[in-house]
Amino acid sequence: MKRVGLAAALLWLAACAGPRAVPLAPDDPRPSALLAAFAQQADGRASLRSSARLAVDTESGKGAVPVRLRARQRMVVERPANLRIEVQGMLGATLAVLATDGSEYAFFETGSRHFERGPLTRDLLWRIAGLELEPDEIVAVVLGGPRLPPDLALRAAYADDAGGVQVELEGETGTRRALRFDAAGLLREWIARDPERAAWTARYDDYADVSGQALAHKVSIDTGSARAVLQLGEVELNPSLPADIFRLDGLAVRSDAEGG
Image (cartoon, rainbow, N blue to C red; front, top):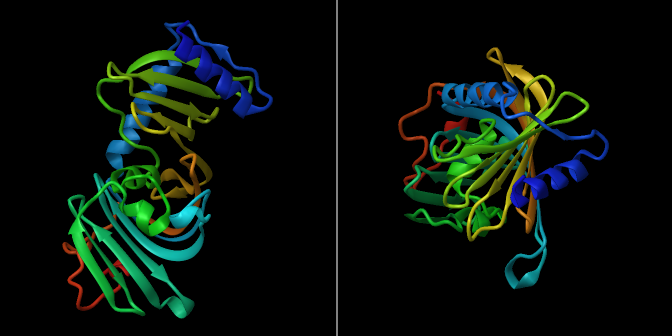
């Protein structure tokens, strides 16, 4: 077994805290079946609209001061990188809006009337919410799992005593992904490792039916420097969206996240 596969297996054993993980035979059909179902699910989820409660805790922010953020939101996401977040106050009043169409972003604070717009940068969500992820990663995570890079190949797979399966994938450039499924085939953990970037993990809980699909309503993200928990409610999958929902004009902010 490759050293990287052994290390990943040991990490998974520690995380499982109980179930024993054993390597699967190369011809075991479960990894391929799980990955195929996962890819089909990703292809069928183009967008999502929901209410959300967000909690973010960082180890260090500006001036090395830890950040603790708690917010109620309305959010809309659409593949590949369209994102709109409306931070809400009492009685549903809009406090701030962030929107990006994957190439440009706009941010508006209601109280101060502060408005900014510009090309999308990799640190946008870090500056605003303390998260080191990019909009396309947030979109994919909220929709239940990112699409897998096409160059990834199966390197190893493990099963635990509870019937769960972890699949280890690796690309030629050093990109690695680990996906842990439970006995029902639901994604429970996603680990992303890329060259020259810290690894990050997404965990999925509180599955509930949405339009005939099992969707995680609780998503926990750990980037090493920040931990975020997103609790979804009133979820709509693949809703009809206004054409301009991921843009702001800086003059008025209407609640597009409510629909219609």
